[in-house]
Amino acid sequence: MTKKNDARTVLDLGGGPGKYSLVFVNSGLKAVLLDTPETIDYVSNQFKLADIRNLTLKKGDFTQDELVDELEERFDIVFMGNITHIYSENVNRDLLMRVGRLLNKGGLVAIEDFVRERSPYAEMFAVNMLANTESGGTWTEEQYRKWLTDAGFSNIEVLDLSDKDKQLITAFNAQLPHVPPRTSP
Image 1 (cartoon, helix red, strand yellow):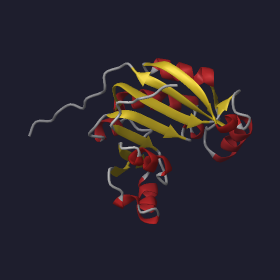
Image 2: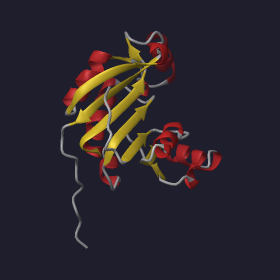
Image 3: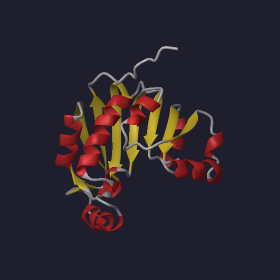
Image 4: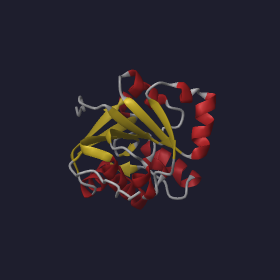
């Protein structure tokens, strides 16, 4: 199983109510939970996430390239829980390219979602996504492997979680992180 034992920082992409961010913080990591402005406003009050030590709430749109330049740090881990089923193949491919630029060299991406042909719920969930999103669906292991390889990731693993309901896809970043250009004062 893939592990990132030397990790200190994690980006919880689209982390919503902070379920995973809290686990990361309680494990000793510094976490940034990034989600839409509306979601961050809601969870910071309703779930009292603004008061959690070592948790930073950040508003943004992770489907936009500007995000890479807006974030001032790079991360050891980027966690993407229940995100890829919302978007099309092209958006997911672009998103993983962007994630590669948000990770430190040797950083880990971890994707939790339904993987078609592995999860017994993936095909039915894909129908739900077709009905409720612009272009969402569920994706095969082969698709995830291609997107990750194209984005410069290696050591790709797919693990079944809890009775194979969902899967965890992990991969390591072999690329140097994107460093935003410095502006002169």
